[in-house]
Image (tube, rainbow over all chains, first blue to last red; front, top):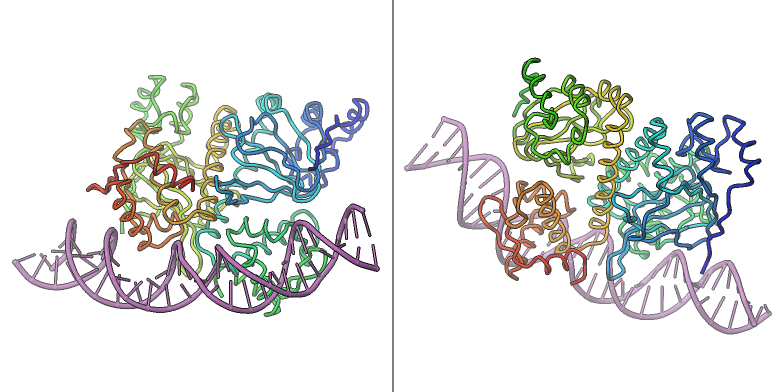
Length: 252
Length: 252
DNA sequence: AGGCAGCGTTGACCTGGATCAAAGCGCCGA
DNA sequence: TCGGCGCTTTGATCCAGGTCAACGCTGCCT
């Protein structure tokens, strides 16, 4: 079992220093300001955020929280990859999303999490007490609006995923998945081509509503038809992006 | 083809009269204040909303907007049922949700709708110009917060639906669907038992990621095993709610 | 009244992906 | 260095749900 290593975000003095630079993100090492809940805010707002956050680190496989737990914390991923999932009583699992640096997690409708969150790779996050963040939101409507925009984006992504799960075949699902990862890499400022795929076949399967065997076979098919190449280290090179896009759209 | 019948919401005088009663909802006949974007607001806020809204009516089958259209309007359903869907180029369709009175639609990330909206039954809506509503949101953070809460709810529903589409079998999907309709009826103040199912088999199929034939057969199975009874007028009586719940959870 | 178009149901058959099984292939710890 | 465990791949077989087809019902339109 892995454990979470919590620690308060630096000493107060160092915090103040951080915030003195207006373009510093209080979420520590978060390299993706444009996606973070913390981005596009005023220095004053950042300072207030910094006051209530705690930086933490989780190892691969660590469960951050489980469906049904009391939802008193919100998180922002600052490095690594997390997965969110829901389970059926018999163990069937659906991964509802993979979270990259800048992504936010922990929103809940009532007072319990509606899904579980687990680290795909070792990851760092910053953690906000729900109550205190909500209080800040009241004070700074701009933060509220930013959070709303993020939720809207997630909703749009969820709808794409419903189309995928309800109507696409295995090849189309894998193609869509690879393009999604590629696009997200670009948005995070990395090059889009050898796509880094940090998750296991089993995670991919549970995200796409398939089995590991089908995921594996489909990767092999795409490799055989030279649309992609499987590189070492969990990297996938896209040889024929247009072909992959046509597949993903169901146009092929 | 059906057409939308737009008309300004009453005369200014009548509007003022409406708003004078603080617990009147500016969205005309909307009977479900607790779910509406308009609910739980101050008289002042309601008055401002009433100023910018237009009530409208759409007939069964009418397309309110299509995926890719410029998203300059937001809507709130006041009566009837709407469906949201996405299409693949070859015509495969995924319905991402059914909207009942009080539900909000038209949120978009960039400036175009990410899905199409069509009337399942004839329906009435109130329509807000996006720009003007956004301006109001700036002014009234409480409205913003309310909208955020609604988006969070939709997100949770979308995650449930992903679990359904990715991991449940046909019987479990139909069971989940019936219980969902039943619960929503309760929340809207109707009795939960003979559930009203206003949508066609084809709509149900495209919502659940099945075919009409499978939907029909599964209804028949549930009827045969006396879990439900199919009544006339698109009503379904739930005879064994616990049994249905076990099915929906995949516990049976 | 008749005809016809769309929906729902049912039957027969087919197939994509699940399931079951077994073999490679790191990677880590002793 | 070796052994073993977990992940991935590949093969063989199965089956839930898709596809194709036919028919009944209902409600329009003429």
